[in-house]
Image (cartoon, rainbow, N blue to C red; front, side, top):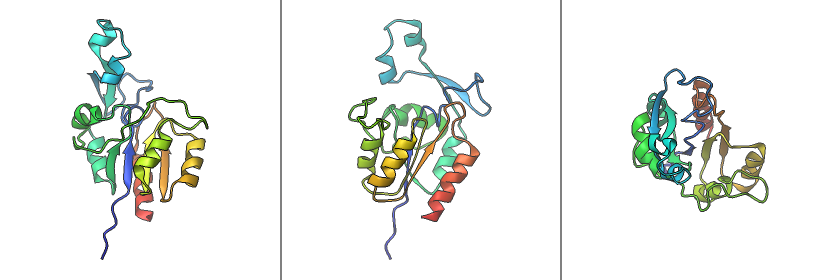
Length: 179
């Protein structure tokens, strides 16, 4: 009997896990952290108040146990790249050795208007079934993945004001169970 690998769950940080556009200073269940990811630091003026204080990140410690309980193999699909394992994972209760998609050129403009993550993400998934949660997904990305990916895929756009919610976890679970 052949055991099929679980589908991938490709996680973005800013938007899904960190509802950076939330109207409340601290949404219920979230804790505020000031982190200093290298990509963000490189865009700050050294010695400035922002540089010293760090990036405000809101994270919900309940998300890790929920995500690890889903029927997926988790991987990072974020500009935080490997720093997601050291800075985000411990705070939310995720494993600190999750695979990471390494972007060849973050924020590169796509000639067809796709999210800059879409093409490298498909290459990384290499035909495996996957769900991708991100705040930057558009209809163009969904159409592109449907026509260029050999396996099942779910693209779940998460509003950056709200982050991942119960209904999103339910959607992910239902989709994985239908495979």
